[in-house]
Image (cartoon, rainbow over all chains, first blue to last red; front, side, top):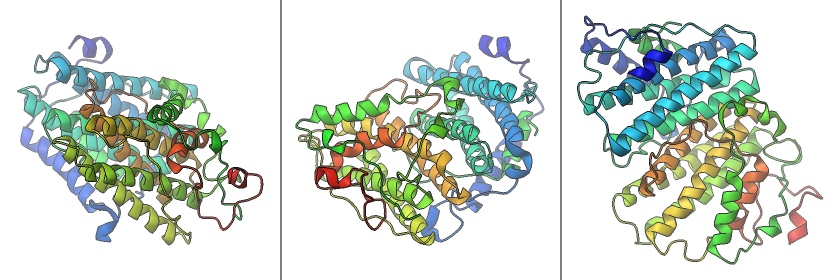
Length: 218
Length: 236
């Protein structure tokens, strides 16, 4: 966990934290995604990419400030995974690469915020479930619930971004997160790992609800 | 929005390549447009135009994307019919084929809903030997997919309608997943290896896909007639 500690404030593992509650929250985000129209146009329901309210009110800076915290959360999580000893060889290479991507995203977002004269948020004190590194399958299970939240956040926020340069950055980072989703599927042995035709956007409320248990607030 | 024509960059240079390596070279050239790290925040997006010489419009951009999705769908369809794919590649490619077709349908619906006319599927040309082995299919797929991602990422900042932008982002992400899936089949370690997937300019995308459009097939963008002097009558 050296990488995390050198970079992030101490990671708090809340012993009282119930895994059941964690999964319930993740499932809530999943339900929101389903309500947003999983399955795409064919169902005639709200499409997966529906434009969500909520992000406009936060504004470009607010969106990027939240994104910064989400990237640090993800980066820290993968750093714990990379240092856990649960992964080796090609699998470890993938976990470490994803960690590096998340921290690169955080760095890019921080410089963007600074350049805009906006505040770079303090690093939250993250909370992870007790059993996050119980075994590889459990870790990957959490990763598989993480990634769609990041994807849904960027995708939900993108249409609300006013600055086109920020949009270009957000949409590229969104794409990396989608690539991570597929990579986690590969690590989990899901065949085929590319198993959705449309990525799902999430409303801001659902994103905040999903990350609140990890110590991230708006 | 009377001009719907895409400004083709000297398409004759790319048309009718003699060998498969010419195709791959054209695709590789597109990859040169790679944007790394914070450089992507530097305003490259504003220098681009997508969807036509006149500056485009959402319908033109969506039609451009539709052409790319048609190309991908046809490629994967032929690959599935080739009989040379074995599991797990077969499952991967079947899913990818299904996704591209769903993207085609979604874009048609989007364009029609916005009052536009979806382009017809062009006739595509694939390099000789492209479907002769699983390896050659995967090699071409591995060069295709980042171009698809780059096209959506490059076009996104030019899109006005939030609903069209949201759709483009959703589809772009799936193309990104295809990149990783194909990487995995190609033995690339790790398969997800890019922190900032690259945006491509429209010219870079056109240069990459021109070989697949062949001679006599133009990139239609839904307009009635090509505007003079934008390249179409020159080659034909």
